[in-house]
Amino acid sequence: MMKKIGIIGVGLLGGALAHRLAKQGWEVIGHDPLSTVTEEITMCDSATELVSQCKTVLLSLPTSDIVDSVIDSLGCTITNQHCFVDTTTGNPEEMEAISKILKALGANYLEANVAGSSELAKVGKAPLFLGGEKEIIHCCHDLLNTLAPKQFYVGPIGAASRFKLVHNLILGLNRAGLAEGLALAEALGFNASEALSILRETPATSMAMEAKGELMAKGKYNPPQARLTQHLKDVRIIQHLADKAGANTPLTNTHQSLLEEAESLGFGESDNSAIIEAFRQKCD
Image (cartoon, rainbow, N blue to C red; front, side):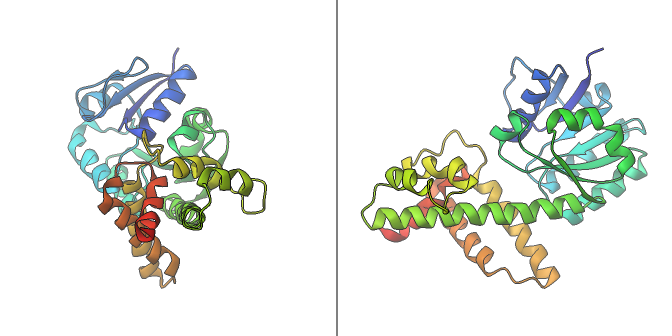
């Protein structure tokens, strides 16, 4: 029999995961009031309708607040036969609370945070950070292996969200450093694309440079691989967690200001490589 999976949230990431699963032979049922129907996904009009059809449900939503709202809306539709696998990058404390709500309803919950862009996720090259009970991970073995062959178990519920934010901090600062360097190159009279071709052959090269360099150099941020406003959301959560833990994050403080400036310039819904526009604005 064809394996069936439900996905609530068929945006950039959820759509990429749906594509990945459909191409690997899964029957994919989706729900997203903002998403258009695709040939690969059978769309439901409501989350309740989807959950009534699917025992395993992938969540790929913008924030943990929205996850909480969706779970609340499902009410008695949730049974002890359901397992929710959450790819949302959210507040770890809220993910822990959601886990307790689902446990009280008899349902299972697992964090499966995606380390990479929607483009990488679509081809199974974005590793997963897993948080939750190992028994549940074992039960979801086929699903997780289809999404990403490379997986890292980092602890109980909440741990994967925390580790994903560590990952996103480092990745985001890599992008910001690249943006600052390219903006400086332009200010000094170098062509950004030509500078990139040289930098790729030096120790300054990076995965961020390969993924985002040409987008920054050419100013082509659409369609986005990951939206700038979503990363700004992550950075704000990082700051909240760092403050609670007493961690010193001066670079992230600056990063947040740069992202906010780029968002104010109208690049919030553009690819996160548009952070370079905050540097270009300062150079004008």
